[in-house]
Image 1: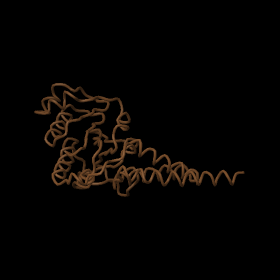
Image 2: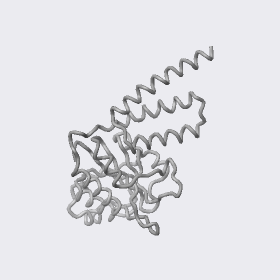
Image 3: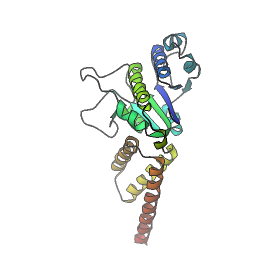
Image 4: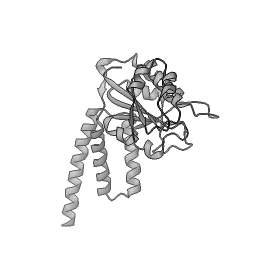
Length: 244
Protein backbone atom coordinates (compact mmCIF):
# COMPACT_ATOMS: atom_id res chain seq x y z
CA UNK A 1 0.00 0.00 0.00
CA UNK A 2 2.32 2.71 -1.30
CA UNK A 3 4.91 3.93 1.20
CA UNK A 4 2.46 3.56 4.06
CA UNK A 5 2.72 1.69 7.34
CA UNK A 6 -0.67 0.64 8.71
CA UNK A 7 -0.65 -1.09 12.09
CA UNK A 8 -3.56 -2.41 14.16
CA UNK A 9 -4.03 -2.37 17.94
CA UNK A 10 -6.65 -4.26 19.94
CA UNK A 11 -7.31 -2.78 23.38
CA UNK A 12 -7.79 -5.23 26.25
CA UNK A 13 -9.28 -8.10 24.22
CA UNK A 14 -11.41 -10.64 26.11
CA UNK A 15 -11.41 -13.53 23.67
CA UNK A 16 -8.61 -15.35 21.86
CA UNK A 17 -11.00 -16.05 19.00
CA UNK A 18 -11.31 -12.36 18.17
CA UNK A 19 -7.54 -11.83 18.16
CA UNK A 20 -7.23 -14.71 15.74
CA UNK A 21 -10.01 -13.47 13.48
CA UNK A 22 -8.56 -9.94 13.39
CA UNK A 23 -5.14 -11.37 12.44
CA UNK A 24 -6.78 -13.42 9.68
CA UNK A 25 -8.59 -10.35 8.32
CA UNK A 26 -5.32 -8.41 8.40
CA UNK A 27 -3.65 -11.14 6.33
CA UNK A 28 -6.57 -11.09 3.85
CA UNK A 29 -6.02 -7.39 3.15
CA UNK A 30 -2.24 -7.09 3.27
CA UNK A 31 -1.64 -5.86 6.83
CA UNK A 32 0.86 -7.50 9.18
CA UNK A 33 1.62 -5.38 12.25
CA UNK A 34 -0.53 -6.17 15.32
CA UNK A 35 -0.35 -4.71 18.82
CA UNK A 36 -2.28 -6.04 21.80
CA UNK A 37 -2.90 -3.61 24.65
CA UNK A 38 -3.11 -5.21 28.11
CA UNK A 39 -4.84 -8.46 26.99
CA UNK A 40 -7.47 -9.98 29.29
CA UNK A 41 -7.05 -13.41 27.72
CA UNK A 42 -4.25 -15.75 26.72
CA UNK A 43 -2.74 -15.60 23.26
CA UNK A 44 -2.29 -19.29 22.59
CA UNK A 45 -3.53 -22.22 20.55
CA UNK A 46 -7.10 -20.94 20.27
CA UNK A 47 -5.80 -17.67 18.84
CA UNK A 48 -3.72 -19.60 16.33
CA UNK A 49 -6.63 -21.81 15.33
CA UNK A 50 -8.83 -18.83 14.43
CA UNK A 51 -5.96 -16.98 12.77
CA UNK A 52 -5.69 -19.77 10.19
CA UNK A 53 -2.92 -18.79 7.72
CA UNK A 54 -2.00 -15.62 9.61
CA UNK A 55 0.44 -17.43 11.93
CA UNK A 56 3.23 -14.99 11.08
CA UNK A 57 1.11 -12.12 12.42
CA UNK A 58 0.49 -14.03 15.67
CA UNK A 59 4.21 -14.83 15.95
CA UNK A 60 5.05 -11.12 15.76
CA UNK A 61 2.34 -9.67 18.04
CA UNK A 62 3.68 -6.89 20.27
CA UNK A 63 2.05 -6.62 23.71
CA UNK A 64 2.01 -3.22 25.45
CA UNK A 65 0.62 -2.10 28.80
CA UNK A 66 -1.36 0.90 27.59
CA UNK A 67 -2.64 2.49 24.39
CA UNK A 68 -0.82 5.73 25.24
CA UNK A 69 2.51 3.92 24.77
CA UNK A 70 1.83 3.69 21.03
CA UNK A 71 0.78 7.28 20.36
CA UNK A 72 4.20 8.83 19.64
CA UNK A 73 4.96 6.31 16.87
CA UNK A 74 2.07 7.20 14.57
CA UNK A 75 1.20 10.32 12.59
CA UNK A 76 -2.46 9.35 12.27
CA UNK A 77 -4.37 7.35 14.88
CA UNK A 78 -7.88 6.13 14.07
CA UNK A 79 -10.09 4.97 16.90
CA UNK A 80 -13.23 2.95 16.20
CA UNK A 81 -16.72 3.13 17.66
CA UNK A 82 -20.14 1.60 17.12
CA UNK A 83 -21.81 4.13 19.41
CA UNK A 84 -23.06 7.05 17.36
CA UNK A 85 -24.44 9.79 19.64
CA UNK A 86 -27.62 11.65 18.75
CA UNK A 87 -25.67 14.88 19.15
CA UNK A 88 -22.09 14.98 17.91
CA UNK A 89 -19.43 15.88 20.46
CA UNK A 90 -15.74 16.68 19.93
CA UNK A 91 -14.84 13.28 21.44
CA UNK A 92 -17.30 11.22 19.37
CA UNK A 93 -17.17 13.15 16.13
CA UNK A 94 -16.86 10.35 13.61
CA UNK A 95 -16.24 9.50 9.96
CA UNK A 96 -17.31 6.43 7.99
CA UNK A 97 -14.99 3.61 6.91
CA UNK A 98 -15.07 4.61 3.19
CA UNK A 99 -14.23 8.22 4.14
CA UNK A 100 -11.31 6.99 6.25
CA UNK A 101 -10.05 4.85 3.36
CA UNK A 102 -10.25 7.86 1.06
CA UNK A 103 -8.17 9.93 3.49
CA UNK A 104 -5.47 7.28 3.64
CA UNK A 105 -5.37 6.97 -0.14
CA UNK A 106 -3.91 10.49 -0.36
CA UNK A 107 -1.10 10.08 2.16
CA UNK A 108 2.01 8.18 3.12
CA UNK A 109 3.13 7.79 6.73
CA UNK A 110 2.55 5.78 9.90
CA UNK A 111 -1.10 4.97 10.67
CA UNK A 112 -2.59 3.07 13.61
CA UNK A 113 -6.12 1.61 13.63
CA UNK A 114 -7.34 1.05 17.19
CA UNK A 115 -10.03 -1.55 17.94
CA UNK A 116 -11.85 -1.22 21.26
CA UNK A 117 -12.82 -3.74 23.91
CA UNK A 118 -15.49 -6.30 23.04
CA UNK A 119 -17.61 -5.25 26.02
CA UNK A 120 -17.26 -1.46 26.35
CA UNK A 121 -15.24 -0.29 23.34
CA UNK A 122 -12.80 2.59 23.69
CA UNK A 123 -13.16 4.94 26.66
CA UNK A 124 -13.49 8.69 26.16
CA UNK A 125 -9.93 9.40 27.29
CA UNK A 126 -8.69 6.88 24.71
CA UNK A 127 -10.81 8.41 21.95
CA UNK A 128 -9.31 11.80 22.82
CA UNK A 129 -5.89 10.39 21.91
CA UNK A 130 -7.16 9.57 18.41
CA UNK A 131 -6.98 11.92 15.44
CA UNK A 132 -10.12 10.50 13.88
CA UNK A 133 -12.90 8.17 15.02
CA UNK A 134 -14.19 5.67 12.46
CA UNK A 135 -17.61 4.04 12.53
CA UNK A 136 -19.39 1.54 10.29
CA UNK A 137 -22.88 2.31 9.12
CA UNK A 138 -25.27 -0.43 10.27
CA UNK A 139 -28.89 -0.89 11.30
CA UNK A 140 -29.90 1.52 14.06
CA UNK A 141 -31.68 -1.40 15.75
CA UNK A 142 -28.34 -3.17 16.35
CA UNK A 143 -25.35 -1.11 15.16
CA UNK A 144 -22.63 -2.79 17.26
CA UNK A 145 -20.48 -5.21 15.26
CA UNK A 146 -18.10 -7.84 16.58
CA UNK A 147 -14.62 -6.28 16.51
CA UNK A 148 -13.29 -8.77 13.97
CA UNK A 149 -16.22 -8.06 11.62
CA UNK A 150 -15.77 -4.31 12.01
CA UNK A 151 -12.03 -4.67 11.44
CA UNK A 152 -12.54 -6.71 8.27
CA UNK A 153 -14.84 -4.04 6.81
CA UNK A 154 -12.36 -1.24 7.56
CA UNK A 155 -9.44 -3.26 6.17
CA UNK A 156 -11.43 -4.07 3.02
CA UNK A 157 -12.30 -0.41 2.41
CA UNK A 158 -8.63 0.56 2.73
CA UNK A 159 -7.51 -2.30 0.46
CA UNK A 160 -10.14 -1.49 -2.17
CA UNK A 161 -9.29 2.23 -2.19
CA UNK A 162 -5.55 1.50 -2.44
CA UNK A 163 -6.14 -0.07 -5.85
CA UNK A 164 -7.03 3.34 -7.32
CA UNK A 165 -4.17 5.34 -5.79
CA UNK A 166 -1.97 7.53 -7.97
CA UNK A 167 1.46 7.15 -6.42
CA UNK A 168 2.84 10.42 -7.77
CA UNK A 169 0.19 12.50 -6.00
CA UNK A 170 0.60 11.13 -2.45
CA UNK A 171 1.42 13.58 0.34
CA UNK A 172 3.25 12.87 3.58
CA UNK A 173 1.40 12.87 6.90
CA UNK A 174 2.86 15.11 9.63
CA UNK A 175 4.63 13.38 12.48
CA UNK A 176 3.05 13.10 15.92
CA UNK A 177 5.66 15.57 17.22
CA UNK A 178 4.75 18.19 14.60
CA UNK A 179 1.04 17.88 15.39
CA UNK A 180 1.67 18.18 19.11
CA UNK A 181 3.84 21.27 18.60
CA UNK A 182 1.05 22.90 16.58
CA UNK A 183 -1.67 22.04 19.09
CA UNK A 184 0.52 23.16 22.00
CA UNK A 185 1.12 26.52 20.32
CA UNK A 186 -2.61 26.99 19.63
CA UNK A 187 -3.36 26.12 23.25
CA UNK A 188 -0.83 28.68 24.52
CA UNK A 189 -2.30 31.31 22.18
CA UNK A 190 -5.84 30.70 23.46
CA UNK A 191 -4.68 30.88 27.08
CA UNK A 192 -2.82 34.10 26.32
CA UNK A 193 -6.16 35.55 25.19
CA UNK A 194 -7.61 34.63 28.58
CA UNK A 195 -9.86 31.82 27.37
CA UNK A 196 -11.22 29.48 30.05
CA UNK A 197 -9.68 26.04 30.47
CA UNK A 198 -12.85 24.20 29.43
CA UNK A 199 -13.10 26.22 26.22
CA UNK A 200 -9.42 25.64 25.45
CA UNK A 201 -9.58 21.85 25.93
CA UNK A 202 -12.69 21.55 23.72
CA UNK A 203 -11.20 23.80 21.06
CA UNK A 204 -7.96 21.81 20.96
CA UNK A 205 -9.84 18.52 20.54
CA UNK A 206 -11.96 20.00 17.73
CA UNK A 207 -8.85 21.27 15.94
CA UNK A 208 -7.17 17.88 16.43
CA UNK A 209 -10.17 16.18 14.79
CA UNK A 210 -10.13 18.75 11.96
CA UNK A 211 -6.44 18.09 11.27
CA UNK A 212 -7.11 14.34 11.28
CA UNK A 213 -10.25 14.37 9.16
CA UNK A 214 -9.02 16.68 6.38
CA UNK A 215 -6.24 15.66 7.01
CA UNK A 216 -3.42 18.17 6.86
CA UNK A 217 -0.17 17.21 5.16
CA UNK A 218 3.27 17.62 6.70
CA UNK A 219 3.75 20.83 4.66
CA UNK A 220 0.35 22.18 5.80
CA UNK A 221 1.19 21.65 9.47
CA UNK A 222 4.63 23.22 9.10
CA UNK A 223 3.12 26.26 7.38
CA UNK A 224 0.52 26.68 10.13
CA UNK A 225 3.16 26.16 12.78
CA UNK A 226 5.23 29.03 11.39
CA UNK A 227 2.24 31.39 11.07
CA UNK A 228 0.83 30.67 14.54
CA UNK A 229 4.27 30.86 16.16
CA UNK A 230 4.76 34.36 14.72
CA UNK A 231 1.31 35.46 15.87
CA UNK A 232 1.91 34.01 19.34
CA UNK A 233 5.27 35.71 19.72
CA UNK A 234 3.82 39.10 18.70
CA UNK A 235 0.87 38.65 21.05
CA UNK A 236 3.27 37.74 23.87
CA UNK A 237 5.32 40.89 23.24
CA UNK A 238 2.18 43.07 23.26
CA UNK A 239 1.08 41.49 26.54
CA UNK A 240 4.49 42.22 28.09
CA UNK A 241 4.42 45.83 26.85
CA UNK A 242 1.00 46.41 28.43
CA UNK A 243 2.19 45.05 31.75
CA UNK A 244 5.13 47.50 31.93
